[in-house]
Image 1: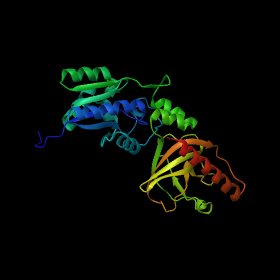
Image 2: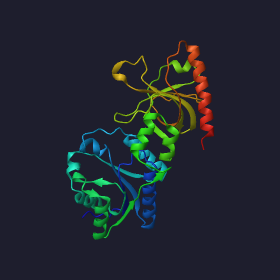
Image 3: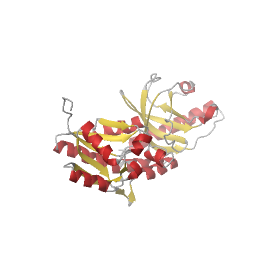
Image 4: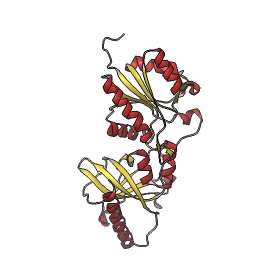
Length: 302
């Protein structure tokens, strides 16, 4: 036994991709229980989607692991977000061993999970077995039922389908916040400079779902404020190597160099399909029109 006593904690277990309204019910309960028990709220999640290894099917993710942590911290004020590497070893661990380790290592006294949560070898750990285990071992447990909106169950799977369609307003309703992308800004095509709006280039992390290609009304969050932007997701014809999808944003009303800085981009609405322009003038006119639409959309969004 080590000399220092870990602070007790209330742990939410799950994958939390998209950090949506279903997850919100669970994370709010975690914070509430932690206050009641004078414990620290925490989240235990995995770096990669368990199905990728268990079923051998890569699941395209709504968010990168850092973005999941960012949303959990920002929306619910839970600072302790621990990622477990999901490996063969993790996959083969029995669910009881997994729980005992969490209690031992983190001082867990209460668990909060969703109704469909499965964990441990062969998915034998379920919300039911967890609740039984907690009753037998003097631990607390909350199982959160499904959350519905417009008669549709809020799920990461449904939100992925919305992102593939580019339906950002509906994705926002189901997540409870706009879809985000955080990345370190890469050098843009210097083109943007001549079009009256600085351009920043970002990319989706490998394994993260790329929404429908096209042009979006977005907002860029910077320490100095939030700025409306127009973002193009697509394969620039000039970039031939391995079809890297570029995420190019024109930031409106901002003047400064963002190269090398980390940016958070929020998606609000799909504006139009991507297209080639015959001249820089035509492109400049379109960018001005897109910018005006983007400002309108952002101003109309509560």
